[in-house]
Length: 243
Image (cartoon, rainbow, N blue to C red; front, side, top):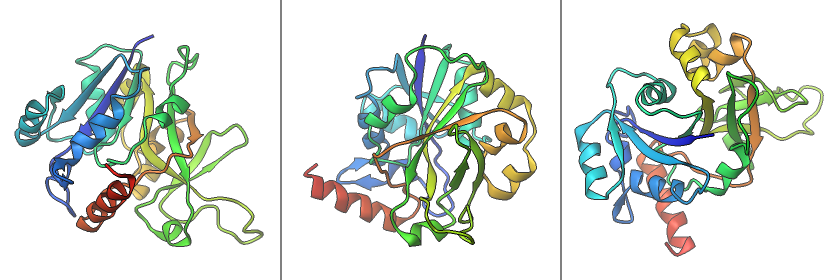
């Protein structure tokens, strides 16, 4: 079984242009993500997938393997599918390039020891949210699961709605997701689904078409960088850790 880690790194961002190159304690953000990801010994290969020569140049500068991919991808999953057409593997681990606090120990929770039986295997790491403000933040994509830890719905709204009880924990999907090659091929060949368009979460394309998406809870929390304020938060956390 071969597993390749892929870090999608798109240059354009509406709230933080050039986000993968944002300065974090003297290093570009993508460097921090790569350094964390390469600690995982279950990955047979690790590559950054970008769409911009400026990011490629930084990857060369810091000796990080990178591939140039198309600029017209509107989702990270589409970019990873393009990588899967260039690099052969059984499973592809998506590691979002805007989460510099990512912890490689979370990879051990989602990466299987043997090849899953489901040829269209998809899984995602989730975090329990600790603060009420995070629950109502639309940038946090909440998940509702069944008893087998299969995702039923992903929404930017707080789900489930606490009408009968508040005795549950809210979960959000993170940037660590796992796909088989057949799952990525299915994704690329299938039009966007209705809920995917509404919520802007591409995992819903699998769910709405009858494929299982497994949710794996991780205690290792991360921070997604979307704004300059998020950069400051990450810098403060790293300073507290003594990095």
